[in-house]
Length: 360
Image (cartoon, rainbow, N blue to C red; front, side):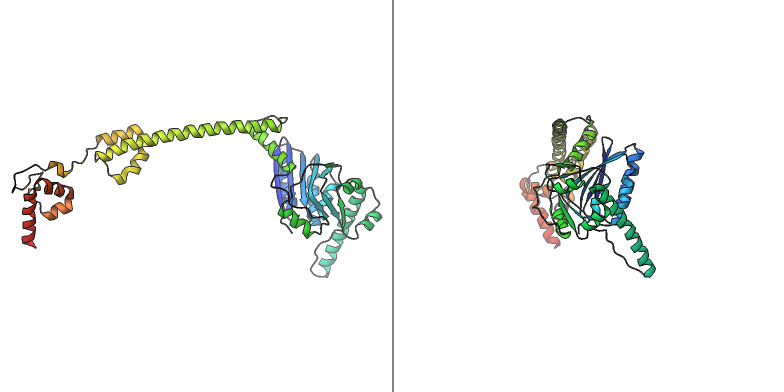
């Protein structure tokens, strides 16, 4: 069994409904009521219903039909399969099918359990519903109820031609039906005599029509717009969106490049450190003028190595109070200054090393 799927959408003042899979008790009728209530509140009173179903709860199907009767008109399209309770919808509303659609009717059945009184009550309800089904099929097929009784003693299968001859559908179309794996499993499960092969991955025509109608509404196009016009409009809008995206991407790239240039210079000027680059780039992209003003107000850090003055051999450097620095001070506070001192004043470094050696 496949789990039922119910879909709904309003387009061009028509409520489009879909049942795919099994008709589960407590699901379809309540969903239909919700969608139909909303449609009527918007003054939408016409509907289409696409059915591709193995059947299911006979009571649920009848309640769903009662909900559909609240509308002015309902037009049904049958997919690959309408079996058991799913065929009851076709007895109340005009329907069309594909050349490959298959149909099956049989006596209603249900699961009954409980005590004697409960079983009797449920059996009576099933007998009443069987009478409803028999009468509906007799009217649709233009047969007597006894002829229907003879017909449905077992599962009675029909192809599209016989379904039309018997009055279950009004029209047969040549549009291809989408046959996916779930539909195949559903047809196998209910004993379908002819199991088709899965079709290529493309939406069935009814679903495609729904999508086109929804696109018309979304694009603000008239209801009589052709599919070609809709696709042209979609392509035009896509081109506009692509151009806008490209323009935005170019602008973002220019912002990124400008920010990189300013922040890289700030790092070179030692106004900020390299680990702060991402933060300042982000700030510059959001507020270039403000960020540049902040950076302009900063003073760069002058390397100590540039402040060391050349001295004659044997003298200690006099650089911003570093006269009393030890080797440890240089290593801890400004290794770069020590490197510069080694290059410019090796004698001073030797004295520092001598002092270090005498203390250790």
